[in-house]
Amino acid sequence: MIADVLIKNASELVTARGAKGSPKTKEGMEDLGIIRNGALAIGGKEIVAVGETDEILATIRRAGTVIDATDRIVLPGFVDCHTHLVFGGSREDEFIQKIEGRSYLETMQRNGGILSTVEKTREALTSPGALMNRAQAFLDKMLAFGTTTAEIKTGYGLTTESELGLLKIIAGLKESQPVDIVSTFLGAHAFPKEYKKRKADYIQLVLGMLERVKTEGLAEYCDVFVEVGAFSLSEARTILEQAKKQGLKLKLHAGEFNDIGGAELGAELGATSIDHLDYISERGMELMAENKTIGVLLPGVPFHLMTNKYAPARKLIEAGVPIALATDFNPGSCPTLSMQMIISLACRQLKMTPAEAINAATINAAYALDRGDKIGSIEVGKRADIIVLDIPHHQQLPYWFGVNLVVRVVKNGVITE
Image 1 (tube, rainbow, N blue to C red):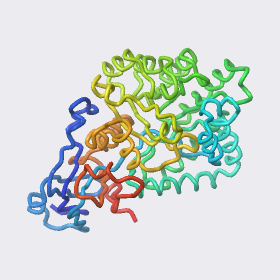
Image 2: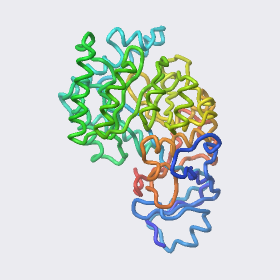
Image 3: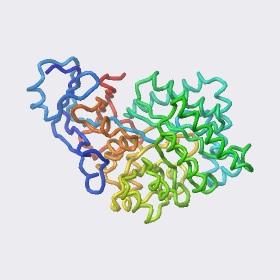
Image 4: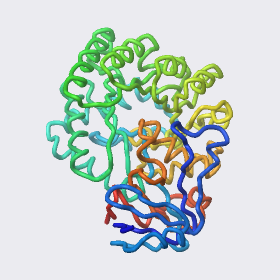
């Protein structure tokens, strides 16, 4: 066999294999499929061989590039399955307000929060090239931290033209840089100021947006923020049912600050994932487990907002809910680009084990984007999205925090700089 890239001598080749057509749950989340002194070979954009180093070397006649991973671990690239990466401005002023004790919902009610970013993003959309360049820089940093696939939501335009403009920027990002992008329409992120007393009219506007989104093929998913002060269950149902008719797959923000039944609604409608879940009922957990609805946990949010209210990860795992992790990168509630930091928080605050957190950030996160058959694990035939970390054991990944442990990134079979 001739390989384009050979990675050998990994102290641990953390394959994350074993999902068998669906995300890992319960005790399956402890299985990382580790191969000690492991190696893998890449041909083109795909993984063509995986095993112990001696075994793989015996099958390789020649390799274009050889990476020696001695005393290092090798992982599948991280999948960040929940971000709001395209936005204008920043919100460090609100961060200071949080330190002083003001809640996120209080800030929203004073036309801050999401609406503050909406205003800045609408202004930035007058120069879409600059907004795209800024998002490109964020993606470059994410790639350096080991994220090889990311979902990007809209939701900071809240008019037809600005939401479509954001989706077109996301489409441009797909073509301009190596990180694979999944696009999500989140026109139902908040009620804009001009519709605060005309909520029914805004729902109709979002339904009209959905038709344009589908006709122009700009998004794969539709998401709704189901929360006190955002969209009610009935409002969310109206939007999500129409999105489903349009052929879009579904996601929900639910249980971030209150449990108003978003988990139950999402499970009923067949959502791919329900995200946040800091607040969730026992019934919500049962329905998500029954429907294999993925719970995307975002521990960076309560960490940044200083709420000290984290998702009940242990209960969710014990209930059989498949768990994924993501950054929720955005300017207001989680300004971090690092999935490594999220894994560290998952272990410290959600009490997930290192193995559970790694599976949640790779193979389960891939399933949260309906791509578990293509990415998220190191297996023959899957895309060659590989990262090398300068640690000898996977348990050191969450142990270190605030540093970048990634030393090599291979994306689609290409070694990035």
